[in-house]
Length: 379
View 1: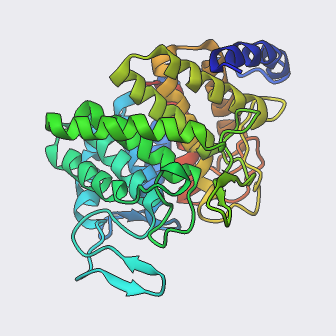
View 2: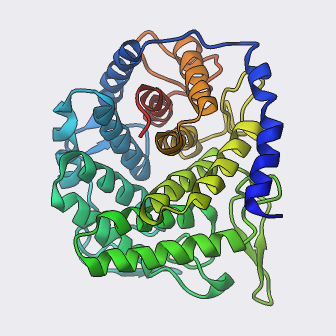
């Protein structure tokens, strides 16, 4: 079925959502009040920050890239620019440096020079997007150069297994959604921003073939939801592995499509993005429109606790382009629920946005804070 026809059919189904959400309508909150909440949330987030490492206590290296992105987006939305110093500090201290690449079992440790590289290409992708975002805010060329160097490393993971795409890690055993969505988003971002025509052209070529490949893999299932990755059969054929639909897989692609639209001006990309966004709202929210991952409340670990904010952040990026009332209503409902039911007295935010407070750390907090930032000002 043609993607645009599928969009209109899905949209027809989604007209029931306002009726469901009417059971728990979010009271209108002024932008000034939303920004006040963002300011309180940023202050709480920075209680976890460790200046000596540029990272955050209680969470991992890749999560810190998302926290940096939250800081940048908050400043773009209207927060004071004082946290630019945090960006510079993290840029200086959070890079990975070891003397040379090392072979450890099946993995090649490719962290032999300064940079934001490790053994997992999705980890690298988060940092590339963080530095693109920081560049947009500050104009500092070293941030854009770092994103370009990360992208160059990620592009080396592309091969013809499964007809294309990049591997999840340097052991080259798994091709999954998140690494490829991030690669697409970084490529599309650099196609608009890279310093030279040659670099922009190379990034654009990768963005075009990544999106074409991603659509062909079957990772987007019949419900327009993104499963985790691919099974590589013994005969070399590849197929959807049917594994968990995580909110971040449903989200990162939205930001990538928005960036790629800004390069190509192809309206079909925004249609594709709406299909995926609307499927996420239809299938990944509860009866009140509040977003959830299936691991909640106690099984999300140090990774999945970050996922929902990534979806909302990228939906905010899409909505900055398309301005849909249903997306603004989604932001409002989730922000109201987070603030009322998933917040401590110290303004720390937990993992279950519908409450009650459960797991809480820097990852859950920065994830929920992404929702507040999205409500404060889509881009």
